[in-house]
Length: 610
Image 1 (cartoon, one colour):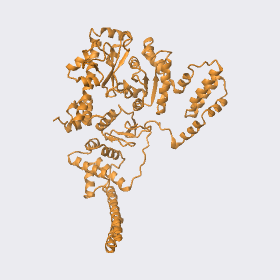
Image 2: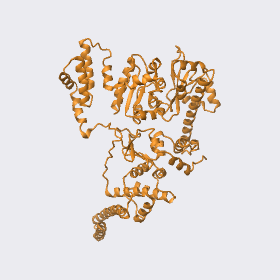
Image 3: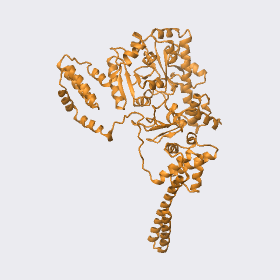
């Protein structure tokens, strides 16, 4: 039987952990009043409805209903078990917990967790081993000199744990075997390959190794680069897609860049990880896709941290085409886009090597242009503006882009630029613009109306949706809110209810758990209380109620009014029940019984009025 983490340890870690700091690693939060608000990481939205309370150490989304404490957040967001969440947070506050001590609900789930953990540990082991080979051994000397010659510093190599894999067919597979890792599991993780005869050999041989980490900083894959390219093997070899590694869900350097992204209030998006590493000294807020186009999941990850994206793709035609496509996708998600323009056929790494990181930051990143300015340059590609056909084609393409803009000032600004450049009247361009997309004009008018206000409002401008509830439900919610705020108030409410139950089943369940929580010797603590609730649905309701604004100095009279409203509804239900009985008695021609029930209804109505 595996050991159970003591409640005291669980509570100690939770109290030492600031939920705002933890969630800030996943969500861009802005303070509004006493709480923090941001875009919910559990469902797609453009308006912030996700709230975090530093006082109560809980979170709640008013959009999808997600809620709980810091453990709940990690469990729901990262898909970890409760004890894994305790272990993760314990390591942050200096309390080490072995996640392997967690009780699993079933054998299959335990095996899956163990396999996942083994694969993570194997990647971590190899990352450390490869890095040691590069930095500290004769076998890695040639590779180290190559990287230094390419302009990478030893500090960069250490920061990103760059390594070297030996040019051996079975060194890695034998190392993993000796360390007790299952070969079949290591093959599934993409670290080794199985031969037809059943033996295994190394996937990465004689390559500079770049560890790829997930958003929690765990190594989940590798990208290996040959020092000298050959016709037989690809220059770069990446780990295959595995349960640990899906390219559309991984952004290189994402976990490391979080703090810099928040400080800079923007993110730099590159095409390759080498660009991230070489520019990291001056642009630490850089991330990159892993050899795949930008996905909706990537954009969602970016959206949690910032509203502004600076695209810095290669300066060749393919890079510009990719930047144009990415800009459209990012803008459609409600984010602001700027584009860093590189000289022809140069990539960020090339620019840094030719100039330096400081020049790259100043001349490229800080000089990035607006999305529309980039599109105007994009549409010049391949067009001869010295010819009439070339000019007309360019102007029509740019006018189409301008027609999609929402702001009248923006439209006029770029129309003026076209007017000045080609010596055309502003009136003629405006007429041409209207003829290009009249439907777009109608859409602009609609989207500028208050009820159709664009959803990408700044984070922090939050308006909670008002929900009209029956009086008895509002009363029950206020009773529970006051009970959670003060244990003495909880016992007062229990006395006033005098054995009666709340009308909503979920409210009654929370009420019962709350009294048990206090009777167990606990005092008012929202973060601790929601932890004992057995399912996500109850946690969501409890955290939503806990976020309510209530009178901290509630008196017995106010509590009495709430209780009266709760009991009043029960009387209403009793009257309805008796009315049905009365009709049934009349249908069976039992008029004496019907009259008796009628008298009961009269008495109930009198009691209701009192």
